[in-house]
Amino acid sequence: MKKNIDDVFGFIEKNRDIYLDWLYEACRIPSVSAQNTGIEEMAGHLGNFFKERLGTEAEIIPTAGYPFVAAELPGDSKKTILMYNHYDVQPVDPIDEWESDPFEPALRGNRLFGRGVADNKGSMFARLCAAHAWKQVRGSLPLSLKFFYEGEEEIGSLNLDSVPKLYPSKISCDAMLWEGGSKDVDGPLHVALGVKGLVYFELKLRTASQDQHSSQAGIIPSAAWRMVRALSTIKDENDNILIDGFYDDIREISEEDKFFLNNMTFPEEEAKKFAGIKEFIGGRTGYDLKECLLYKPTANIAGFTSGYGGPGGKTVLPASAVVKMDIRLVPDMTGDRVHRLLKSHLEKHGFGDIEVEILSSKPPYRTNPDDPFVRTVIDCAGEVYGMYPAVYRNVSGTTGMYDFCTAIGAPAVLVGVSNEDSRLHAPNENIFVEDYILGIKMVAAVMAEFAG
Ligand SMILES: [Zn+2]
Image (cartoon, rainbow, N blue to C red; front, side, top):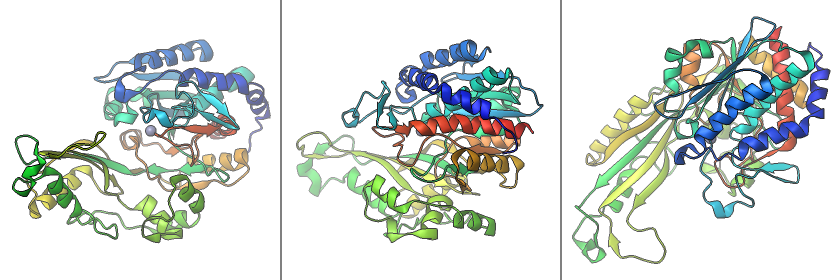
């Protein structure tokens, strides 16, 4: 780092308990978008936070769904960084598997447990605290900051694509820190430069007017069996996706893409341990494994509902079956084309009676790795974490980066405070306390360096 900001770092250290308290406050609000709880409260809490602790009025912007929260803090240089985050969290079920109340953050050892600490209130408040520390120590920020928050990320960012058209001035910037981002548990921070896309389908099938007594199974068709047969045409035993034309649009993996994979660490043993598996699909390892994780599309059955799934037994013949399926997209695949291909695949295999509806769709996105902002973030990560980061060309997950980045034309990088054992979306979500403090310093450092 060229700039000395030891005074800001010192202030962050001195105020670590306060900064942790601010995260606790936010995590006590159960802002579960899927269940419409705590949303208004959380948006209001953020509005108050900006006013009382950062001295600016945030705007709470209504949408057809849950409100956006937007705020700005002017700074000394002409440059602006936009912080995109979401204030909603995932539902807590299965609640019995939590070791403490998901909405009462709890310290155990060096970890902080609670819904949202990792995804993504931890990163959100690390950024807010970095701004606070700068203002307190230096009186002003080295560059301008914009904050744009949505409350619908966990249900598919239903209104985010309207933002560049409706509120261009609230997101115009020179660079973005996107939500997400992770870290090896005992290894480097991840600096990620993009995301996969995602198309989410619901497949619906009805084979009779209503469920039947299962004694009729010899003569009346079962929706469950029919759906199983249809699904089994989509993927083979070696995990190849069999939809005709599915792989045709995929951009060839470039030498540069390979360079990123080759230089990126991936803690295989840890990842297997966290997932509780003996080996990855096909026994993959090394480059092959990383390529499958980051550069190849997926076809995942997210849920299958048919017949009876409650306690004990019920002899029933299901008349309907519903499957939720998500397909992760890589450049240059599109959700619409995959939708068309999947429909014609099912028709071709005699399953034209299965309805295929798109529930949501987001294209993949990658930032230009040669952008100077990327270099700044990588350098800061090396300094703050004392270790060169793992640079991901894209992560395996999906967010609404595409709409913002293509409209603004600015680079976006994902960095955050969670780690590979943070259990996002699962029981006992957690972060290391130290990663939260380092995350605040990281944002403070990026502000200093990018200001120039
Ligand atoms: Zn999430």
